[in-house]
Amino acid sequence: MATLVTFHAHPDDECISCGGVMRKAADEGHRVVLVVATRGELGEVPDGFLDEGEQLWERRVKETHAAADVLGVARVEFLGYTDSGMMGEPTNTAPGTFWTADVEEAATRLAAILTEESADVLTVYDDFGGYGHPDHIQVHRVGLRAAELAGTPRVLQATTSQERMREGMRRFREAGLMPPPAEGEGDGDPAMGKPEAELTCSVDVSAYLDAKRRAMRAHPSQIAEESFFLALPDDAFAQAFGIEDFIEVGKAPGIVDDDIMHGL
Image (cartoon, rainbow, N blue to C red; front, side):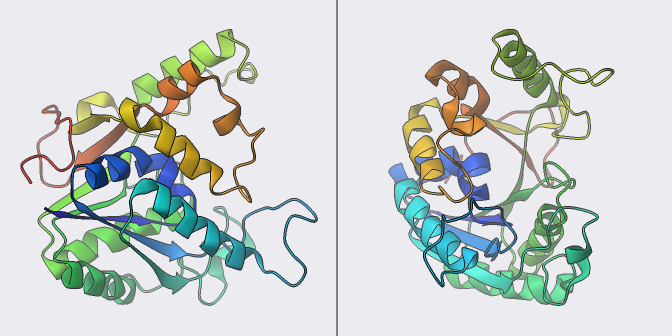
């Protein structure tokens, strides 16, 4: 048995980007640990959704534990920082936000968990944080430094194949599942994800899509039943979420594994 620690910025990020590999690792007998930098205090929630006196962060912590149960997670930890909001928002620089955290100090917090767990594998995000959110970029920076401090042998950056993303968006638009692109936009955001030539690991998680979808449903404050994620037909959901891509730190690109726990 090996230990996988998967590090994320906010509640619900875990099931979207790594839910399949988490459930897969758990089913194969590995220990799965989820670490979340913030409690997602700045998420949007419909009026009347929360109970009287309930704070959003309280609900999102509960949702995280519910999703973790679906994904086979053995331990959930929060690093204690607050949500920074989207890039460019005034909230980015508020005291206590993850974006303003000292990388060395935050990495020391995470490294303590990695050391306690004798982590074999750590997942973070790519250097753009997937889509440019400041907390996601900080996960990349803090995670890589924490792995250095703890001596974690395998570190993988969760990302998305740009080519597969563009093709998927083209098909979704043809099927009427997405609106047409704005003038001059094209299919896909070239800043999101990484070229397939840079990937080192692409995991087919189609066998775990039911768990991945149920984990998303465990976050109703952020992922409504009518949201794009959950409203997709089964075949489209499989196309969008059936493969999880990674770049392993220190490994030459172009040699693509099919399991982040390979050899363990």
